[in-house]
Picture 1 (cartoon, rainbow, N blue to C red):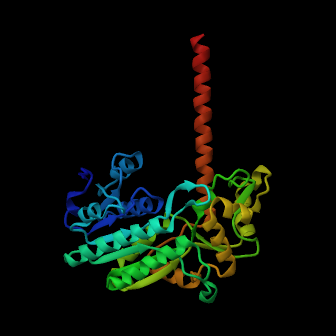
Picture 2 (cartoon, helix red, strand yellow):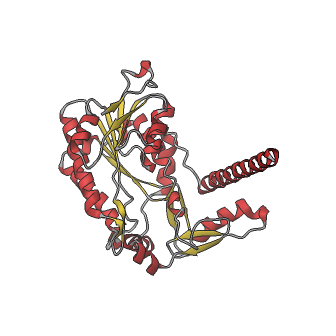
Picture 3 (cartoon, rainbow, N blue to C red):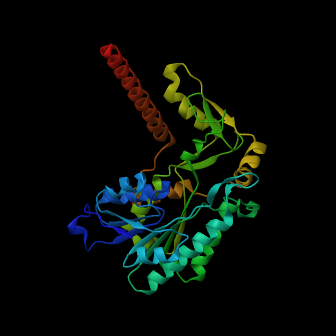
Length: 345
């Protein structure tokens, strides 16, 4: 089912059509919003529920149309990919939390990946698709220390191999992001990010590469500005490379006027493995080998593609501002309700 968008600029009817899978996910939302701002593309935002609040928000953006599609439903992808020039594809291993399993299911992500690549292949054989951008995950800094790697890493790497086996490598750009800043926003009691606590999963002495999830959109926009140069390439991408205490200090500098001290607190490995075993394996992996983004090389590419990465400082400032705005809004509403109660008397 197609939701026709009246907000698609008539002048873009012949512009490149970019399909974005899982459009209401964190990555997908960042890609849709970034490409919408560029005003150079028609964007098909593919999502399972085109009536959800997140979908409707995306559908209100300029040059965006909503398409009903599900990575677990190949035929829906076939319809959504019909006539597109570019596809941005991402997959997820998350399938609801269960005791002794957690929420990460490797087989679930693999099925999505096979469905996605098969439909990309089909769209390519029809003759219009010319570029596929796949969001994977960063390879290891030291390949000799790669194993054992977490299942939600190997699933994406196996999907990359499937891309190659389907003879799609020449039209594919693989972006391999590292850990997201947004992952610090866990809801584990005592380990939730606050002005006094910066939670982490690795020991304080290890450098940890991270990136803002919205920067995936910046990278997609940049790659599309020079597609021929970046097809048949894979890039480990990151925004920061800091130790846990350095991250905590970044936050502390933003709140020190309040007389607060921010401490880096490591979530116990045994707790991680009990709640989400694969994340515990990931923490072991980061300490053993580390993500392999070349920060110096990335600066050169970012300059070429006009990408300004989001710093951890700026991400934290945005988070604090959002919290303050929410608190001020609640305060205004409370005062207004108190005034109304008094007036009603």
